[in-house]
Amino acid sequence: MSQNRLKYSVEGLGENLLTTQYDLMIRHATVLNSSQTPVKVDVGVSGGKISAISPQLEATATQDINAQGNLLSPPFVESHIHLDSALTAGEPRWNESGTLFEGIQIWGDRKRQLTVEDVQKRAIQTLKQQASQGVLLVRTHVDVSEPSLTALQALLALREEVKDWITLQVVAFPQDGIYSRPDNETLLREAVQLGADVVGGIPHYELTREDGVKSVQCIFEIAQDGDRAIDLHCDEIDDPQSRFLEVVAAYASHTGMGSKVTASHTCAMGSYDNGYAYKLMGFLKRSQVNIIANPLINITLQGRSDTYPKRRGVTRVKELWQNGINVSFGHDCIQDPWYNLGTGNMLDVGSMGLHVCQMTGQDEIAACYEMITHNGAKTLNLEDEYGIEVGKPANFIILDAASPYEAFCRRATVTHVVSRGKLLARTPVVETEWFGD
Ligand code: 17E
Ligand code: FE2
Image (cartoon, helix red, strand yellow):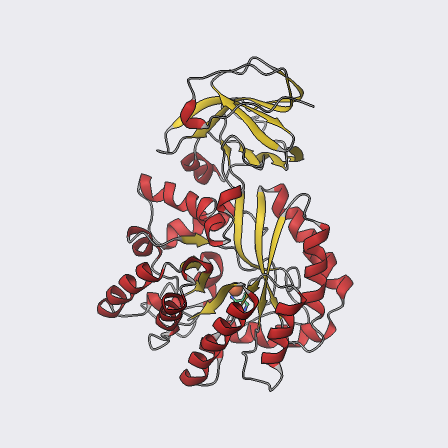
């Protein structure tokens, strides 16, 4: 067993204590320090943890990886996905209108055929696809407005099965609304008792504004009773009158749940007038809620009733970030009734976000990278275990790029994925052979 006595982080780069033997050593990596400045380091891993970060480590290791000056980054965080519907695009039919509502109808038919094996097969395939592209933390929604709770049970079992290589959080999500059927509230409570980590909701899809507000109240009660976090689909619509985000912010403040509360999508914010949005921004900041935008999905689902000018349907990511609110980006769907494309690549998500939200300045691009890494870990309330620091679990990736900017430019390959101190996946960089002049 290797020594594990080195206690300094990237900030303490000057010290270079010797150790005898690491399990894994990454040489010639670039990491970003706390002020986002790139520094060249070697990283030593032992006992599943990062045990040394130094400009040069004079040590041996059971396994050596030469990063060749490339970026060693904390893993990508998928803060919002629906694994229960992943890889079902076209079943039983394709979403021709491209709307959220047709997606819900198609899923309504598909979910009647769910079995535990069907859900687990698609989910594990998706998780492997995600992990091989550098995602090691995932929050998945699972529809619990389905009487047998098949998908929930499948994903709760899978959460345990995969925990040695990927961290999965499960949100109990009543896709059809809590009040669309008499037993949906009971199903949501049951899902929490069965072990869902997070309570979900969909206030904009309840029949009335009043039902929507009541659903938020109910969700907070369930979460407080079960000591769970909250992540609602909130205002995923172009309707500027859809104002459930203010209700969520109010409950987050009144209950003191603060950063344990997340509002996902919040598309209507892109349709609010500036006066209201400005007031809301202050409330959001005080409430400490997290926001998740899903740019790949909402740029395609929203704006469908517009002619021209056509709205983008994505929430005010740049302004939320400028106001110090924690924003992350999610993929939302991989080849399902709402979005028939996608591979789980978080650089695709971040890139779409930076385009749609016009975050092309250098600091803005860096912020978009944070939205697929650190900010997602914060939303999942897992930041204590996350980051490139001595003593933290050795979960990190190496990209074929020297910086986040370059990673976005070239949609860089994640060449190495290290999870719990072990190499989990390696992907070679594709090289073109040029036969012209
Ligand atoms: N369900 C929903 O209400 N909204 C979405 N974007 C997806 C599922 C993917
Ligand atoms: Fe979603």
